[in-house]
Amino acid sequence: MATADVLKPDFATRRKHFIFTDDHEQLRDSIRRFVIKELQPHAEEWEETTFPDWVFERMGELGFLGLDKPIEYGGQGGDYYTTLVLAEELVHAHCGGLGMGIAVQTDMTIPPILKFGSEEQKLEWAVPAIAGKKILCLGITEPDAGSDVAGIKTRAVRDESSGEYVINGSKTFITNGHRAHGIVLVTKTDPDAGYDGFTLLLVPMDSPGVIREKRLQKLGMHASDTALLAFQDVRVPESAVLGQVGKGFYHIMWELQGERLIGAAGSVAGAQQVFDRTLAYAKERTAFGRPIGRFQAIRHKFAEMATKIETARQMVYTTAWRFQNGEYPVREITMAKLYAARIAVEVADECIQIHGGNGYMKEYGIERSWRDLRLNRIGAGSDEIMLEVIGRSYGL
Ligand SMILES: Cc1cc2nc3c(=O)[nH]c(=O)nc-3n(C[C@H](O)[C@H](O)[C@H](O)COP(=O)(O)OP(=O)(O)OC[C@H]3O[C@@H](n4cnc5c(N)ncnc54)[C@H](O)[C@@H]3O)c2cc1C
Image 1 (cartoon, rainbow, N blue to C red):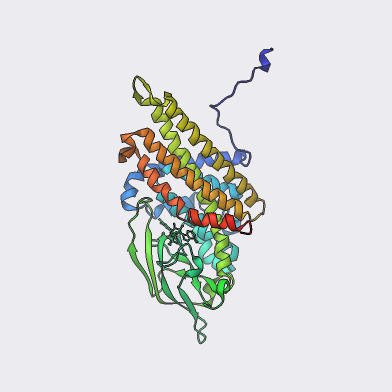
Image 2: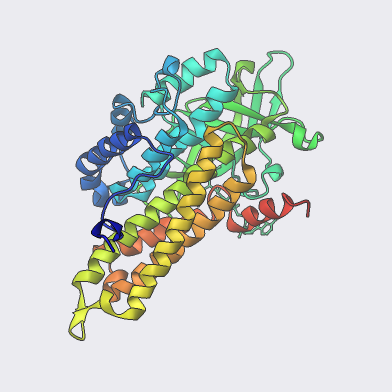
């Protein structure tokens, strides 16, 4: 056989996925440099204090909060993959709560404003949010209704004399809730209209009657702030309605698709990051006279994990391609979110095992990855709800 016919696999080269161009890879490098230089050094401190607001301003200044947003509103005019790159690279901050707080801005609140908002709302909220000068939060979940979005009780009643909406109710687990300037709020405007009785409102958080009650303590994602909020006779003008009156349920279901897909991307990136760190550990740590990674039992764990991560990644990228190309791939997004969240937790758990006692120690940061990633099976819709959405999509 001629030498030229001998093909050997090259496992070491970095290979870009076909959805990404060289421009995406350059963007990836510049975000990673920023994250490692300006964010990662503070990760330990921010676990205690939550990350500071200047991160929004700095990222706005660098254009990172508007990568896929239209140029006329201060964005970079990139495609959907650019925001995917951001979500992937933010894991290098080693600070899950930071990635989540930023994603609330970039992929959960700005998108519905740009999609459903009036020109005035885009200028008042989306433009400064893209610039990092206003921080936003999203209010769906309530103390008595999370998975069952239609079961929310927060009421917005129209005052016919002034045309204003008067809001009463409460929201819980709200990421960025303590720092936010505005909230995209899901309210019930007509309790008798079923799914047609919901309306989204854009509410300034300094409105009289908005009460930021408790900063909630959590298992993980410590760098993010999570609020319990109350709304007591909060009055907003009619111009605060985001989208159509009565169509808020459908609007928020649209929003959730972007939230789930970016969550899936974050899960895969988080899993990859904890895998990489554990691989390096397994090559260095020795037992019985050899690196632990050389035991077949451990090697197979890596093989299993790598296969799961790669499967989830392909699901995310293929679904992102559909999203970018104008489809509304709800079933595929739901599958990607479910699978990526599950395997991320499995991978983090296995990485603790491979680290042995060190995996249980804070110093190594592996237990933190597990705690942070654990949220992904609950937030943006739990595993059980994802299974419901997928199952029902087959007419069951
Ligand atoms: C750290 C954190 C940050 C968050 N950030 C935000 C935010 O910024 N904004 C926001 O609005 N929300 C936020 N959430 C809320 C999150 O989206 C909800 O926690 C999630 O949707 C689940 O709702 P729940 O907690 O009320 O659980 P429940 O709805 O009470 O569910 C409890 C259990 O019952 C299961 N279950 C419920 N219904 C069904 C069913 N039909 N079939 C089978 N099983 C079912 C669930 O899967 C779950 O296992 C956040 C949550 C956390 C923990």
